[in-house]
Length: 85
Image 1: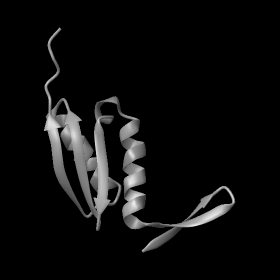
Image 2 (image 1 turned 45 degrees about the vertical axis):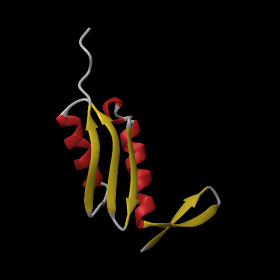
Image 3 (image 1 turned 30 degrees about the horizontal axis):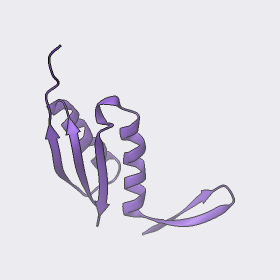
Image 4 (image 1 turned 180 degrees about the horizontal axis):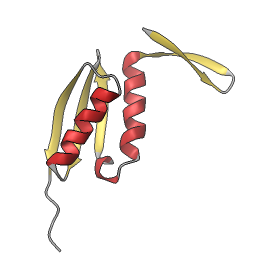
């Protein structure tokens, strides 16, 4: 499925995978705890890579990927506990 996106005066076709990826990049950039997460999407499957500091952040990243329209999520996130001060 292709969706037309209006960028100013230029319309371009965006496929479903690209739309999911762009949405997730925007959503993750708004959350400090998810800024180290990178995402790619292939055939509707969101692939998450990077570091998170809690299992709650991992669950949030996965939930947002599904909310963005991913059919499935491949979790390759690394859990890094923050250093104590």
